[in-house]
Structure formats: C-alpha cells, structure tokens
Amino acid sequence: MSELKQAKSALISVFSKDGLEPIVKKLNELGITIYSTGGTEKFIRDLGIEVIPVEDVTSYPSILGGRVKTLHPKVFGGILNRQDHDGDVKELEQYEIPQIDIVIVDLYPFEKTVASGASEQDIIEKIDIGGISLIRAAAKNFKDVTCVSSVDDYQEFLDLLNEKNGETSLADRKRFATKAFNISSHYDSAIFNYFNAEAEVNSFKQSELKGKELRYGENPHQKGTFYGDFENIFDKLHGKELSYNNLLDVDAAVNLMNEFKGEAPTFAILKHNNACGLAQRDTIHQAYVDALAGDPVSAFGGILISNVEIDAETAEEIHKLFCEVVIAPSFSEKALEILKGKKNRILLVLKDIELPKSQVRTCLNGVLVQDKDLKTDSLEDLKLATNNKATDEELSDMIFASKICKHTKSNTIVLAKNKQLCASGTGQTSRVDALTQSIEKARSFEFDLHGAVMASDAFFPFPDCVEIAGNAGITAVIQPGGSIKDQLSIDYCNENNIAMVMTGTRHFKH
Image (cartoon, rainbow, N blue to C red; front, side, top):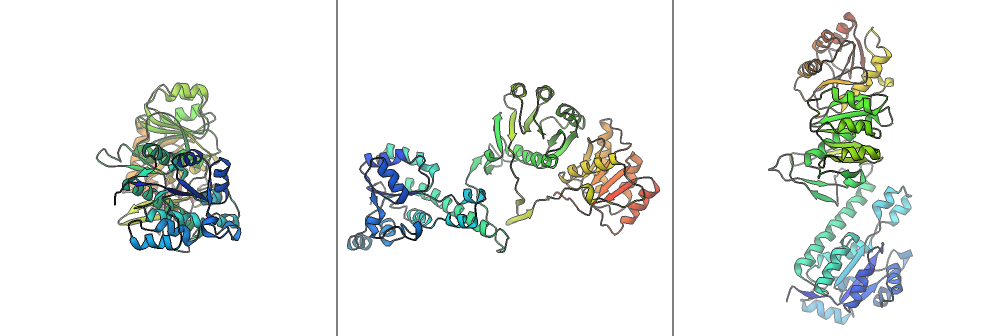
C-alpha cells in the first residue's frame, strides 16, 4: 500500500479555537467529513460548515458533565484500525465504525490552570482524559492517521493541507506523531509534578516544550541547545543571539542580583559566572562607576546587570565598555538609544517573576536535583564570636559581602568595603589561596583594605586566614563557623582587634 494517503474524514475536539477556522474551512473545501464534539462542534456549525456530532456516531450523549464524550469504541476503532488489515476492515463494516484519518486535539490547559492559583477541584477538572487518549491513539496509528496535537502546529498542518490537498506522506504523519508524543509526555509530566509537589514519590521528571539550538556549546566543537521559555523571564530588546556561555552568565547575574531586589541602586559586572565588580550607591550611575572600579580589566566582555532602571548617564558610561549583555528591569528611552549603538550588544529587560526554587544538573549517568540556596544571611542570623564588636558599617558590609560570596565559586573569599566589592578569590582549591588571590587583586586596583570586611563561604579550619586578613588591614569577618578549631580563629581575632560573626550557614557553590 502506498505511503501517501488521502484524508477523507477528521475528528476535531479542541479547548482553544484560536487558529482553527482556516483549517476547518480548508477541510470543508477539500470535501473532508468533519466529526466533532461540544463547543468545537458549535464553533464549526457557526462557520456555516457541516459537521457530524460524535453523539450521532456513538449513539451516546456527552455524559458526566462533559467528562465522557469521545471515549467509545466507535471513535477509537475509527482511529486505531489498520487500513491494510483485512480483519480490521471487516470489523469496521460489521460495527458501522467510520474511518477517521485526521485527529485535531487541543488539550485542557492544565499548566495554566495550576499557574493561575485555581482551586484543586478546578485543576483536577483540567486533567484531560478524552483528548490525551485521542492523541495517543492517533499518534500510535501514524501509519494511517495524522495527529495534530497543539495549536502551535496548526499553521504547519494548514500549509500541508494547502500544499498536498489533503494527502500526507508517511514521513508527514510520523513527524506529527512525534510532536504528539512530545505533547502527551509533557502533559503527563506536568500532572505528575503537581501531584508530587511534596516529593512523596522519589522520581525525577522534567519536561520543556521549547528548545532553541545555539551556535555551539561552551566551545565551538560542542553542540548546544537551550530548553526553556526565555521570553517568560526576559524581553530581548537588541543584539545578537545569546550563546551557551552567555546564558550561563546571565543565569548567574540574575540570581546574584535577586539578592539586592528592592534595595538601593546596585550594579554588578560578572565574568565566568562570578562577580568581578559590584557596588551599591545612591544612584545607579555611581553604582556602575564603582562596580567597574572593582576590576576594570575583567569587566571587558562581561555581563552587566542593574537592579533599577538604567538611565542615560549610566548608559553613556556603559557604552565606553565592550560588554556582551546588559540586563535591567527597564531602560530609559535615551539609554536604549545609546546602548543600541553597538549592534551586537545584547539588551535584556528582566521581568518581575519568581525564579525557580530548585536546581538540576547532569551527573555521571543521571541527574542531581537540589533546593536552591535560598538562605540569605541577615543581621538576625549573626552571632558575635569575638569580644570585639563590629560597627554598624562593618555589619552592613558583611551582609553585603555575604550575598556576593554565596554566588561565587568555591572556595571563595570576598573582600568588601563601603558597599563595594574590592576583590574576591574564586574557585580555589585552598581557602588560603582564595584569600591571597583576593588581597593581591584588591591591591592591584589600589583598594585600601584597612577597615574592609572579609566573607568566607565555609569555615576556617585553621587561624591562618584571619591572620593573613588582619595583616592586610581587614577588621571584620563573616563566616559560617562549625570547625572543631573555630576557637583558634576566634582567639586570634580577639588578640588583634578583629570582629568576627558566625552565621551557621555554609554557602558552597560548586
């Protein structure tokens, strides 16, 4: 039997009618018999197009408040029969089952209903039964049936109808079947994750319907793809396509700046997922200037992010720097005009949305899933470990430094003064190396560390770090504590007029 098939009938049962009208009109133009249910049937009839109610086929009305409409052998027999199987053909005749060549279904909007904050009963009612069954049946029998399972595929299907006048190839039908199983598996995953919100079933399911192939991965010889709804978080106003590395840096920038949401104007510059400059000031212009001063060398080609609107004055300064991405909750009209002066510079407006609360990464032959580090150290968390008390300015700077430290690769040390990042030691295998790196870097950019504070992502196993820090002029230290030798560090601080507070919370970032 030829793989080309001419459709003679279609079953249409959809929740959303958007984009359906031209398809219905084309099916009618091609002389294809249309079967339908409920609201879809009325929609088609209102177009002045003849439609056969499914009830006329099954001899059963829609029952149980619409929960059961298409679940009947005369419907599923029409979809699942094998047209080249003599026994199936005879049974269709025997039981007066109509052949169905096309199935068009749009499922109840389960995810949107959950996101809307609807009641559990409303959510349960949006678990589609008939629709998902029709999709699975039609996709399984792609050898004979074309399954259109999403509004997103309507245009492609309409183009196919126009191009081939109702005929489809096996490749066409298999392509639509693949799309259908993508829809059905995603739908089931969303339902499972809703029911498993408390993780009572120890199983991992994640599904993303949107995928965008990137130019390459971390390096040109690696393939890269982003799966997710980027537009749900950002409005992209200008610039080239984001790369794999851009996306990782943007993610790091957004999570870091989330620590300063609603606070005074704050500007951060990131490179390779770590902040190389960050400052909080009375104006965003001054915050940018002081963030850049933290490391003007590393800032080249960096990712820039602000927690408030970027104005023209700030944009003029940014425009002098080569940077990959600039992110802000908004840009003034003049600022946009200035920043668009570099055609490849990516400009993103960060929407006010809630960020995910969990993290997923591949590991060995599986995945690791964890809660995000949502703990932000606050003044209430601090326990004074030394006889020397920190000043209000030092306490404020320690909280500031702790926020940066939390988002910097371990082992890390962060040095800050007057709400400005002086330097950090990132991703070192030794905490002493991280501290030494940060001090040398701060001095290279002529920072005066006398009166600065030090934040560490984990405890000090020995007093060497506080000794090195004290010799550099640092007067206050914030760290989790928890070492069996904490007292050695405390004793050194007491003897050398250094204040130390402990948070009780480690912030490793591997």
